[in-house]
Image (cartoon, one colour):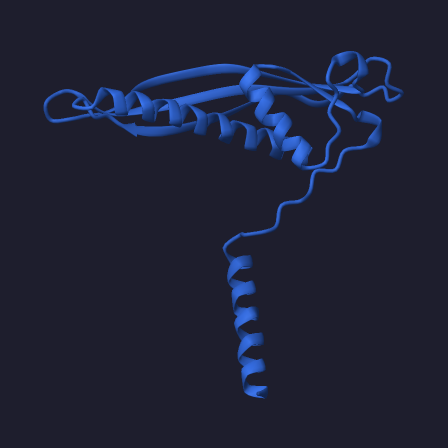
Amino acid sequence: MNNRLTIKATLIAVITLLLTACGYQLQKPITIDDSIQPVYIDGDRLMSLALKQQLRSNGITLASNSSTANSIITVAAVDNESRSYSVSADARDAEVLRSMAASIEWHRIIGSKNSNRTLIQKTIVDAEVVQIKNPDNVAAQNSEGEILVRELRERLVEKMVSLIRYR
């Protein structure tokens, strides 16, 4: 019985050390002063919705309009492009690089007591992904393209949440 307990303890210690060594760490929860809550999120509709969902799930109070907010986060799509990444032997696009960039900035409302209004200066976040082209199945390729655009948007929102978390 004592031998099993030693094996379990050793296994837990080894797993913990391996996770720490590879850089894994639990995410720091988002903590925002009450003086800058509720937060109003303005800008690109799809990114705003995704960012609102992430902030709500982290317990941040959001405002439904800017007049009731103590701070405003503005997000904007900056760039959304696709370009050839590689060419096949028959001179067709074999892969396409899809990239997306967005900006985020966060300011206190003017009436705030603190003189430093800027919480996050305008910052550009970007993400990219490679899509393999299939000229024989255009419908599937278009569907995959839409999925990849959603994935890129989710990556951008994750980066925005990290900026908010570690500001």
